Length: 285
Image 1 (tube, helix red, strand yellow):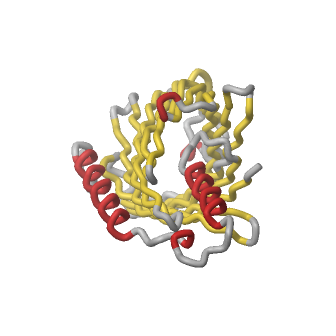
Image 2 (cartoon, one colour):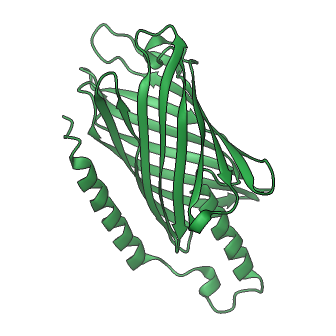
Image 3 (cartoon, rainbow, N blue to C red):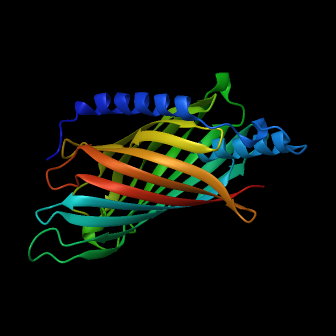
């Protein structure tokens, strides 16, 4: 059973407090703090810390290729499972000495078990979300920000996996990174303008996020990926509690993330909870 949407703020606040207390009381010392460190260790540590900050910034000047794996449970009368793998490449381009444009793509591959007796399972692609953020290279007042168009492409291979419409609207992000903390919000609004689906798209997405990174480059993050469907008058409010670790395989930096998802609100036939595992390949210049 879904809990009312009004529990969202309480749950979010509790998660923030717990994460903050935990990381501030238990952050281990870095290798650079240990006696006998070789010369240049501090510089290398600073470079790694800056790379970690970029991985948490959705509009950083960093090429990254995340493969985000999601498992959601408790769907429909059969308590079915849905697996979604989001391929999410992020490609920054320098327009001039003052501005970047960052391309963010989300292409989902979906497997949905039978949700009710007599209903078959589904497998295929979902609709593609494409965003372009125009972002100043200098952060005004320490705030990182960007905005631009968001697009929806009807790439779904089954009518149950997509809206069957072309869509467009504005998207924006604003965030700040201070003393290991990363916090901000990403938002967009999509309206459909053409297509063959049964209902037009009119949806708002709000994604506030808050995280803390330790000296060993472990990040504790909590966010919501909330969507409001204006046609149905219905919220979908998944809350994600995640741990991310940056490491290197040879010379290749990667980021690994594990997460638990709780649905604070959603349609009656929607999922109750879920899990997430993401591997992100990072490409520095």
